[in-house]
Image (cartoon, rainbow, N blue to C red):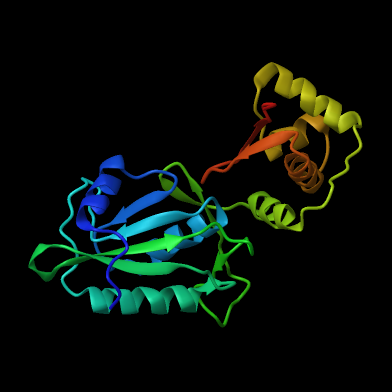
Length: 222
């Protein structure tokens, strides 16, 4: 086995930072689906590190049978994630032969990645993105934005009546949802959705993904 890239002291420093948009702790591998969700969310967002054998309370008990845990996780990631995600796994040795698994997931150039729970039903797939310290299921709009960002083409949009109503609302309230935009502009949800996605890809708006309802706000000029 390769000597670990991270030592115990570096691990403790990392854990001290606490969970966030690029860091997640899991005590055990008994719910691999939650770990895979995090791996997919990191790949779809800005990358991140998953520490297995670390509690939410920042204690580091480690894993007793890291070989088995690693085997389980590698198998689950390879079986349920599509397209394949590139990641690395390393181990940090603790005292009394226990170990922590460190899964590093870079931001992926082939986003969006999905979890397909049942290979017999490939359409029943879910994508996740990282919002703060949570892995949130991606809406259709978020998935379209991830695809569009990979395409890197110039986005053109016409500034018509619906965009005028949108900007007027954002000027007064600063945020909007797809459903609210459809209702204000008197357009179908599909057109509202497509318009907001285009405006995010054109860097006019920003999307704030949520498990409940995504919000859109004007993008602040840097």
